Image 1 (cartoon, rainbow, N blue to C red):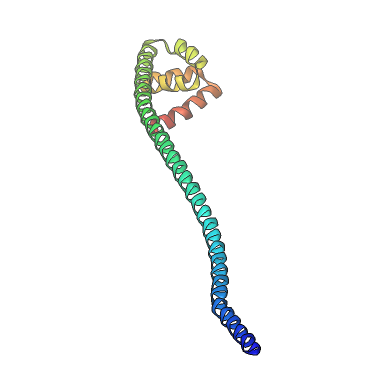
Image 2 (image 1 turned 180 degrees about the vertical axis):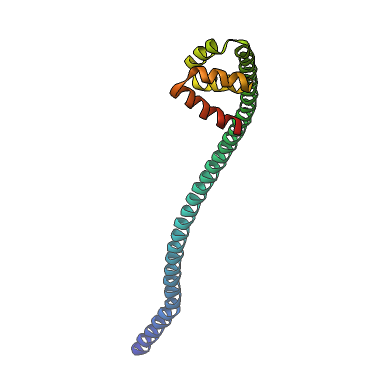
Length: 172
């Protein structure tokens, strides 16, 4: 009987071991799976952290781009405003230049009439001392006969230069 008890105890032990063995191995598998899940969840957390950081970075860049876009729009508006002001000033300048030129032409015509009435010798001595452009303008406004007499009294190289310039003035 002693051998029967030993056999019975051995059988019971084997059954207990076999009964608990799947649970132990099942628990070990759960632990292994749990570790894998932790590793996977750690990896997931790392990826999530990276994604959040990238999202924040992208949002900051988007905000910065939006600010820059707004600044550029403001600058564009300022440039457009300055261009409009510049166009207005150019128009005003053109009007002023035209008025000045008209006044100068009127004065030159007035001077031409005065030189027409002057003695040709006196007119020649004065005109020969004037600026070339003014002298040409005065000669251009004078009657042809009076201008010819004045040029004859100027004489020499100066008369030739004024005549050449006068001829181009008449062609224009």
